[in-house]
Amino acid sequence: MTEDEAWATTPITLRDRVHFRTERELPLAEFRAAMPAGVTVTLDEGEGLYRVDGDAGQAAALSALVKNWCAVHEHRTVGLRAESGVRRRAPRDLPPQFLADLCRHYGPVSLKRLQRNMSTIRLHIPDNDDVVQQVSEWVLKAVAQYDETKGVPFGAFLATQLSKWVHDLGRAAFGRTATDTENKQQKAIASFVAEHQRRPTERELADLLGQSIAVLRKNAQSVATLNGLRNLQSLDGVPDGADHLLPDTAQAPDEILGEAEQTLLSHALTASCAPDLTARADQRAGQPNVLGWVTWYLTTWGGQTKTQLSADLGTSVRNMNVHADRAERVLKDRLLELAG
Image (cartoon, rainbow, N blue to C red; front, side, top):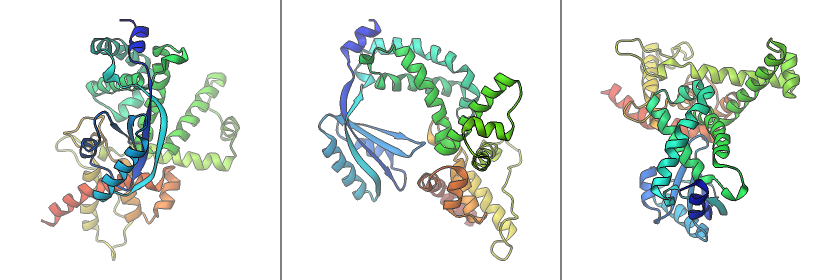
């Protein structure tokens, strides 16, 4: 079966969608099980945005169902809205053999295209098998979004989306604003170096980006903070017998918190934000919770408010709360162990 024949058998259709966020993470498996047959639930971890997709005409019913379920389970929804006419295709509706052949073909093609982005991917997905699985999921995601009526070949559409989705890995880990700022600066610097065989001065870079020196310096601080977060080796796991890198204990006055107690609490926090070794690397639990760590540490011992920290990191307070709540659930168990 050719691609044109397959798209014709399963054309992209109009669906209704409900978008919403919550003040704390939903038990996704339980929430999905409560939805009607044929309804899909996805989570954009970078934005903390839930999407519930159903057939055309279901928007109002799905919206009410989501509100009721969240109310019963004591989850507060934020910014819930229904949207009609979203163009989507369910990959499972394609002929199984065609879908398998499509993934078999475009999986290696996608990996080859992503070679130049592999250093970025490995920051978030270090295992080879998990990288292959993530690329396969991206192929299926492209299948769901591809609109054959626009005349663009599927391969070209997939290539465009891959670049965006690789960038989204950084957004999910470190926040949209800081990651976008870093990407914009890197592109401008690379373009200047290619033309002049040297790095731009501060003034030249500001002119390239259309910014003032003051704005450039502020954005540079966000990028420096982002790079610092990436270098928190204690969250990447350490070999057996290696020393754990504990946070600096100098920021809490002795009369408020003793050095020994702070060291124990810092260790518990770091352990709470480390990846779950039993989870897949591409799952949320398999990723270091860097934003949760820095939110807890700098607001507890660094003397910063969440508003100040949000401005420094270039992410929203809501996103910081989501990651901090995730850390808190594990931290409570760690502190009980210490108390014992």
